[in-house]
Length: 279
Image 1 (cartoon, rainbow, N blue to C red):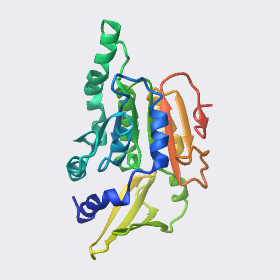
Image 2 (cartoon, rainbow, N blue to C red; image 1 turned 180 degrees about the vertical axis):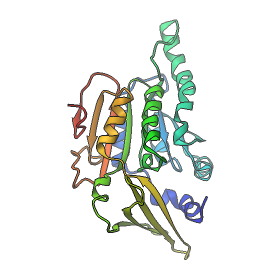
Image 3 (cartoon, one colour; image 1 turned 60 degrees about the vertical axis):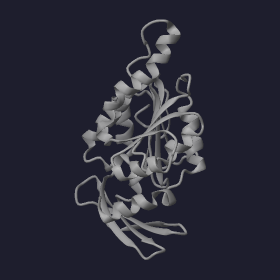
Image 4 (tube, rainbow, N blue to C red; image 1 turned 45 degrees about the vertical axis):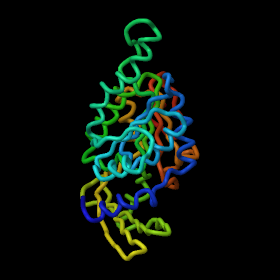
C-alpha cells in the first residue's frame, strides 16, 4: 500500500463509520431476498474495514465482506467486527458463487427433501457502495461485475451499487472541491478533476491527523454514467432496476444529485427513478 492508503486504513473507521440512513436503506432492500434459517446471506463487496458488514450482521444478516486491501481486512478481523471477511478483488466476485450456493442451498434442499432448486445463485443480496465500482480498470470489468452478481445472487435477491454522480464533475476542466471530512482525529480534503483519458476523473484526497501525519493520493476512476450502470445491470439479466439520488430514496437528478444509488433485482421488468433503459 502507498503511504496514503496505509494512513487511510488506520483511520478508515473514523472517516467512514456506518451511517444509520445507509444501514436502514440496505437492510430494507436486502431483506426482500429469501430468508434462510440464520437470516439472509448478503455480500459486502469492497467492504473496507467492514463497518457495514458489521452493522448488517448485528441486524441478523449472514454477512461476508471482502476487500482488495489485506490491511483493511486485517483491521476488520482484529477489531472483532461481526461477519466473515476475506481478501478478494472486485474482479473475483464470481469466485464466490460456489460458496454462496453451498451456504444457502443446503437449507433449501433440506426443506424440500431433495436437490437445491434455488436457481443460478444463492446469496440473498449483494451491495457495493462507497463509490467502489469506479475503481475498476475498465468498463468491461464493470459489465463483468454485474454478470458475476447475477450468478452469485439468487432469483429475487437484490444488488445495490452506489457511485458518485459523475455528471457533476465531467463537464468542466476545473478542479471541483468537495466538502472536507472533519473528525476529531483526522481531516480528509477531497476534490475531482477531469482525467487524462476520456470517461475518467481523478480523485484527489489529502489526509492530515491531529498528530501531524500527512499523506495525499490521486486515484483515476471510471466516470460511470447512469446509462452505463443501468445497461450493465440490464444486460446481465436484471429486470427490476431503480436509480435514486441518495440513500434517502430521493429521485435521481443528473444535474443536482451527488450520488447514484442503483438497486436491481431479477424478475419482471419493473423500473423506476431515472433508470431510463427500463422504458
